[in-house]
Image 1 (cartoon, helix red, strand yellow):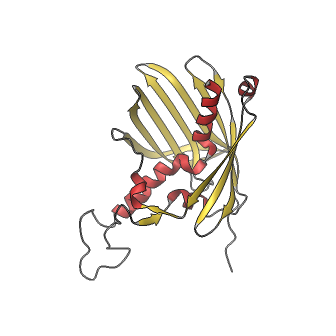
Image 2 (cartoon, rainbow, N blue to C red):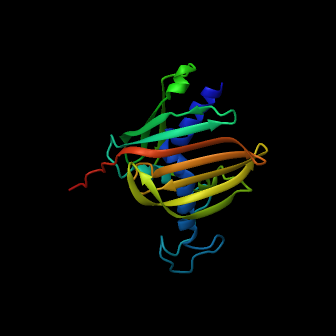
Image 3 (cartoon, rainbow, N blue to C red):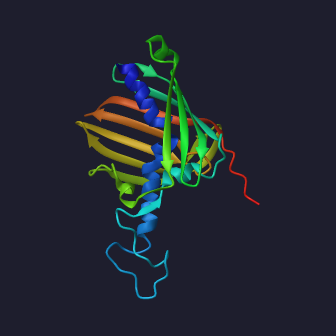
Length: 232
């Protein structure tokens, strides 16, 4: 059961690289849209579309940050993320997940993720490989940009240097603190624009009181960031 949960966490951490950073991307996208005009205000007469227009309504379709995080890359672009998942009893699972852009159109794209169990997980009977597919439409409803956000979440943003496949680069990060199931959860995501899916690193820590019940980390170890050739 513990290993099955570990593999599920693995897919959550890096199986779909765009999804892990989607909340951060959504927040940035929503902020950019809202900055156009404060909610509730109507554009002045003669306002210029896209500059002075009011922000969209919850049901309006807007660009999907998860799609845009992969869209500049050619089909076949990939990112490999190594993970480390520790449990309260001291057991550790170390899976490696590769996410690859397998199809792309103007309307949607598909990312395939393959998670390979570490030696400890395989020894305990876990499947050697776990595959999943995630589809990202080019457009989503504006209201979805805030979907799933914890009501009590405290968010900190900034920039830090992180290691991406052996190279130190500057990343934008978002750290989110909230409570769930009686535990204090701290999630931190570092995003880099030149990484397919944008997520360069992620950490998750859960505590009951002062005792850590779970910790996990994921970091890019290899990437093929070939971008789509410009059309002539």
